[in-house]
Structures are given as C-alpha cells and as structure tokens.
Length: 488
View: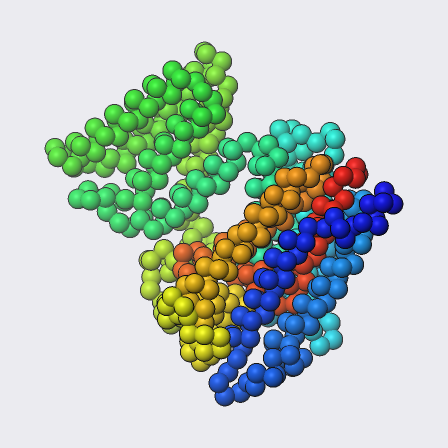
C-alpha cells in the first residue's frame, strides 16, 4: 500500500485530466464570448474578479486545488465516509428549503457573504458515493426487491428534496442513476417502462386533438393504445418467451387492428378505439388464463405493464392541466409544437436557434457574435452557453466540442469498466451517467429538441457551484481509479 501511495500521481489517468482541462478552457472562452460587450467590456477585464469571467476563472482555480487534494485521499476513506457525507448533504438540502432566498421562484441557493452556493450541485457527489457503497456490499443483489427499493430510494430522496426547492430540472438529473442500476443487472423492464411512459405522454399530448385521417377519432389516443399492444407483445416475446401465447396474441391483435381500420375507412365509419380496448382486454384475460393453466407466471408482469400503461396514459391529461405549473405546461406545448410563443416560453429557444444558425460552418469568430453580444439570448452564459459556441465557432467548432465531450464520457465509461471492484465501477458509471444526462439535455434544449428544464452544461455554463461540484465528482473517481488494485 505504501508503494502505491508514493506512485499515486503515476497511476492517475492523465488523459481524462487533459480532457477535463480542455473542456474547462473552452468553457471559459465561451463565457468570455457570452459576457463580452462591444461597448462596456475591455478584453483585459476578463480576469477581473468583478466580471463573470473573472469569477469563473477563480472557481476553476479553486476546483483544481480541491481536485489535487481529493487525489491525495485514500480510496477507503471515500467508502468509509460515504453515508456520513450523504446524510450531511441531505440535511443541508432540507435546510436550504427553509433558509434560502427566493431567486426566480427557486429556494436552492445559500448566501455566504458575497457569494452564493447551491447545495444541490454537491448532493450528486454524496448520492453517487452512497449508491456505490450500498451496491458494493457483498450481500447486495439487484434482483432482491428490498435491495432494489433501497438503492432507488437513495437517489429518490435527493430528488424529492430538490423538487421541494423548486428546482425540477436539477432533480431530473437523478434519473440517470437508473442507467447505473441497469449496468448492474437491473431488468430492462424498468427502462422499457420509462421509455414507453415518455412515448405515451408525448404522442398522447401532441396528437390528442388531431383526427386519425378521415375518421372522427383522436389520433393520439388510438396510437397510444396500439403502442401499448406493441410494447406488451415485445415484452412477452423477449422476456417471457412463451411462443404460443405470443403467436396467438400477435395474430389476434394484428388482424383485429388492421381489419377494424379497413372497415372504418372503406365500409362504415365507427369509433375504432373501442376495438383496441376490446383487444387489450382480450390480451389481459388470455394471459391470465395461460398463467393459471400453463403456469406462465411471466404473463403477470406483462399484464401489470399493460394495466400500468393504461393508468399512466389516463393520468397524462390531468397531470398536464392540473399538476404542472403554467410555465412548465407552456414549455411542453411549445416544444411539442402545440403553441408558438416567441415572446414567452419559446423565446429563448428561438433566439438560440438564430444564433447557432447565423454561425454557419466556420462561425463569426471569437468575440464577434452579434446575437450573443447584443443580449438577444437570455441565460446565454449559463443554460444557453452552447448557442455562443455555435455562433462564434460555427458548425465546425460546435462539432469539435461535441466530439471532445463524447470522448470524455466514453473515457469515463472505459475507466469504470476496468475497475476491480463494484464500488469503483458503480461510482464510475454514475459519474458518466450524470455527465451524459447534463450534456444531452442541455445541448438538446438549446437546439430545441428537448424541453427547457434549466440544467447547466458541465464545465461550460457559468456557475461556481456547478463547476466545483462536477470537479469533485471527477477527481474523486480519478483517485478511486488510481487505487483500483486496492481492495476495500
């Protein structure tokens, strides 16, 4: 162990640190471009502590200093203190709800003197440590219901706390931990259920008021029912593998759906949605009978999936109009093309698209973007920082940033896979999943293909808490990776 401590800096993955520094520098330059004004800003003022660029540079220095300290901490300490760190930050998150000032409707910032800190950014580190520690127990089994529920509860608790702080976007990041559980052996049924729920919601809401061709029925309603049948049949074939049951239901549902549609279009119009309900009911009854007579217990999971899908879809309209807040509902409607609100919820995305499109192939050059310099894009140095890159560096520069980010995430996954124990592997995949979620959602919302939920682009968006939080996550893992030969 003494030998390994002496050589720790030789065992660190310097390629990952190089990618980190590259992203950090590109991010700082992007903030310079977003903050620069033709009239007010002197280039020499970029390092001034009174400017955002100067503050970000300071936080970059602090993060690097903290990172070096983290590299000197033994791997066993991370595991031994994981639950204490988790409890501390959960309590701090709860305290934040009551003591934080209201900033744009959010209660997530604690003011300390002249600067503010967002505990939610550090709760990701605490949750990652606790989840890795819990799953690394010898007796842990992902297919054990109690173990699975406890592991999910570890990241649902911070989600609940952050939602209570009115930071919905930051809370959704914790859903990325499901990818980690999937890597550790969680059934694909959970991911299929999550994906299908998103599809039901989008299709049902987007096409809920659209007619199905010449028929006087809801295109969204009909499509969702058909999708439920398709997903259920896929699950039956891939998971349960009851060939006879699958073939019977495939024939009945396929022929029934096509025949009903043909009759309604070419012979006599009628509400074909009723037929889909009848087919779904038949599928449920048939699978229950087969489960009873042929001992096909896997059918029960498919039946539960169908019933859950029906219940979820039935609740979508209620959630959309009675649970979601007005600004959240409008954002979804704008994203789905149900409403064009260029002066309201859709303004940011519209201006962002203009800025990115105006950059062309090679961009307008560093500090030469007109859309961002004239402040047409709100939040252009935080949530919408990527539009600055698109305008100044163009398609070529944006592609380069995307490639570096993708390489960084893939490198983290490779490091996670080479770990010799579960603790390091789970921590590594948690880290990669968090970065992937932030990267995908942030770039997607800037391009208008994802809802605007307000999460930063790691190492690019302005914010000390964000930069420091991501750096702590990364450097802790690099130390764990350097100690991968040590059993804990």
